[in-house]
Length: 281
Image 1 (cartoon, rainbow, N blue to C red):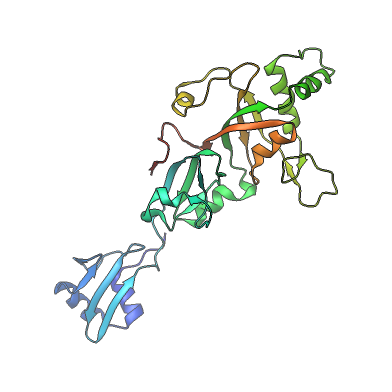
Image 2 (cartoon, rainbow, N blue to C red):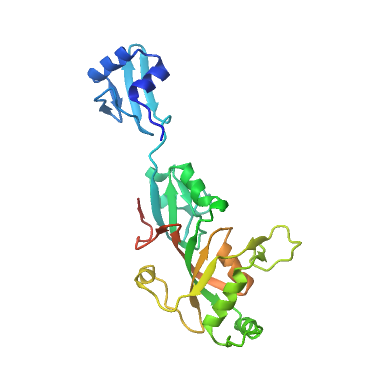
């Protein structure tokens, strides 16, 4: 981390002699964030307000030449807010976060209808570490799905040559879909399977998926609804990439409707029992 002494900063930026600066410190005529500086070896911090009048020089600076101390903030995004700095038509997460985080970058965009863990940081290097595709950071989701076309499910299961799959087994259906999603599917913006000639479609896939048969304490805290046989089911999905509405479009492509999507983990960080709409460092 780049550090800079108060003495060095004033010397370099205002051309004042060392002796003059140390005298001003002794006379308590130099202030950081409204408080008089106590010692000439003071290290400046990013964002501090520096004020002084030394000889004919008036100093009124906000320190930006030092690197900020890295902050990582966890935020539980509710439904109804978008991950954006500005949006004329929607409420942004920064309405809930407050002014102290207005200059922080978010990591892990969630769409308006989704909820769960979003990370924020003041350090662009952390953003690159978690967002660049080559790092393949895992993101984990709990997804509640309703299959709109039950006949499609039956046809999909009946179409397999594996005799172990039974027509009415959710486990078998998820096993089949998992294999399908782990391959590249070409899906358009409307969530429909597309042809190779479709120029605006995306190749989408997942890393893994499993059926959630029973809710643990964390999932109950997150108000995940109990799976209901024949109506909807709950799955745990892991991605190591993320495109626009990635999970929703995959399910839509096979006639599934996502009715709830909660991100519970980004990399090594878990949402745990962070209340909705709140944040913690």
